[in-house]
Length: 315
Image 1 (cartoon, one colour):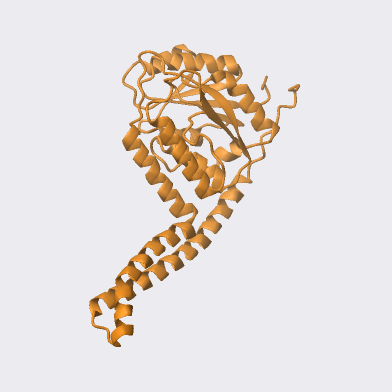
Image 2 (tube, rainbow, N blue to C red):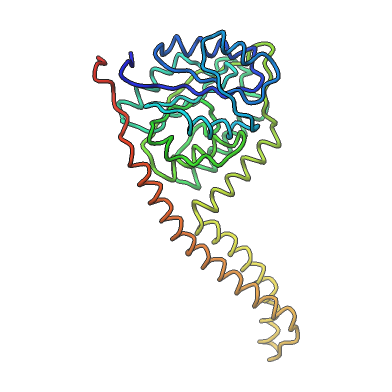
């Protein structure tokens, strides 16, 4: 089907012995010519054995965290098309040919698998609402509509992978991937994929609250780096509002009496107003730096050709 293309599937795993064999088998059935790399991330069970038995190429990333796995895999693996999928057997591997075809037909650089539950309990309590809230927040801030920014099922072009910095360490890697594609404005689309419960004996590694806080913190950091004028305008606006609250009574008193009796309040209000102005100025300076960084990232991205359909493939 894709004999003229080198396609690599990256499957991050930590203690997934109950599911990884099925994931590898389903990926092999979906795209027989694909290289399947299972990245073991400090598993203490038989994940490695099950992956080898299923015919996967097993590699190791000893630094804990999904983000560290993706960072290592993107650096080490050379391919034309990259597939990223979790090793918990919750995603429909049969949707993969459609996702690859969408990437090649575009040509696109990022195809996001938007999860559609095929079992009622696929989402853990609160996760669907939290995911929706994050989707709306990121879509509003970065101007690109995203319907499942926390999905772990994606297909990428080589030029996307090799221009992606991969700074995140853990589960916030999906957020970084989403924001990178939005800030670089790469051509992308979404494909609906099935999403089901984990198999018996497989446990989620997500912590609803701590991972949610990490994702929200990453979004704030990405806004600071990618939208510095917006970030510093909000920050400067808050400081200026405090300056007004402190300074208005001083100004009113001055117009009433012709004197400034509250020197500490006057000095504090003036200082806060100056800080607010400097914060806004800093935002504009950083915006220029961000523009230069984006131009360099774009040039790095353009070093690689667009993904193309194999010459021998018939539609």
